[in-house]
Length: 191
Image 1 (cartoon, rainbow, N blue to C red):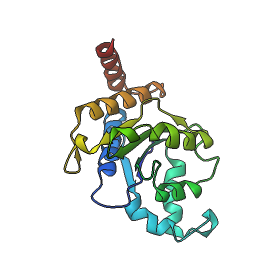
Image 2: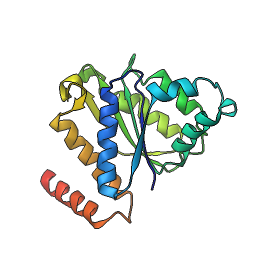
Image 3: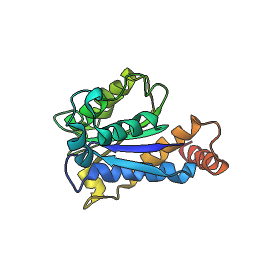
């Protein structure tokens, strides 16, 4: 199983990258797989050398191939002008429109205030609807108060990550027994 985190950050250090990494770590732990995170601060200069997929060089093709062949995507972006970053948009402009059909996607965003928290619902979720991907119901949103420096420390955000991963587990019938017991215990806590 391939797990890929995409962080739409365009600067470093990045709170968004921290959230994406935390989600990927949780998925890795529960599915006993190794994941990878691509930060657009590094990938965007490669991708912006091409305006269309047929113009990508080998490095650009490798990034797009990683996106298209992932089984699980964790996609996060800082809120920028009430949406996701242009770098993230450009990446998905290069992805084949059929490549993400049925893929599972966890959505995440970071912003300065809680007022931007619905960006995941109004911007990111429709993007993946276009691709016929399956977005996990629980999205993760974090504000500056959820971090110490650039490290995620907010308990409520960590709880939402656990909830999103539990929902993801439900979509994989062959998930390991440890993951299923986590899901059961979390459900019991919320009832």
